[in-house]
Length: 241
Image 1 (spheres, rainbow, N blue to C red):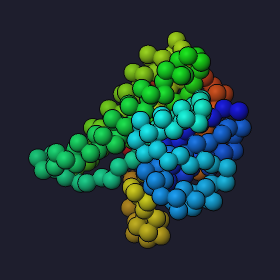
Image 2: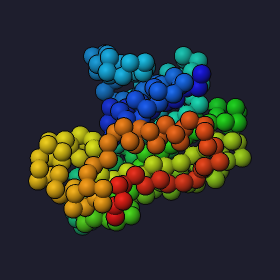
Image 3: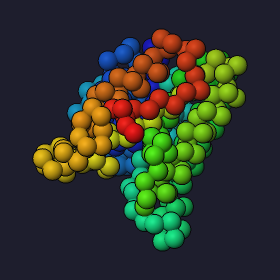
């Protein structure tokens, strides 16, 4: 059985990806910064029956834990999330820029560096980076996530070209207007009629994308059913912009 790793499993596209991967003949390992607490691990495992929670928080800790458990990763979903602070470019706090850079670009690059040698040795593997469609239509006040998400998508493309000869498939999924409590919370954009109308005016499909829908897309990309598909950024936006 193949083994998949999903990072930040409680956030952004994580819940949908985990649920969809659990429907495949695949062992699903989950990372989340909150999993340092036993109660958070237990709650997630109870909700996602069959998923296994790792305790490591940093890329090095994760790699060490995988090595200690003799766990080989066949598929890796780099689902990276970080809170957004809205600010005009002239008012961007450099600490916010650095923290966003660390979470959305440094973390996935470092973890890739640590997992890639084993994939190269086996000459197989699937990697999906969950980035963002924000660069398609930059919005005032969101230069930090727009810029760094674009960097993550570019890294995915560069990596795909570098490792294709090893039989490793790499793609990015770039959502916008995806339901998540961090970015588009239910209370504001689903339960509130005014919020639903705001989304309907922006998204041609008239609603937020669901975790289940993005999960199915991610599961397809790591399933091994179409390994010639690599080096692509799939925009998951309901037709926006």
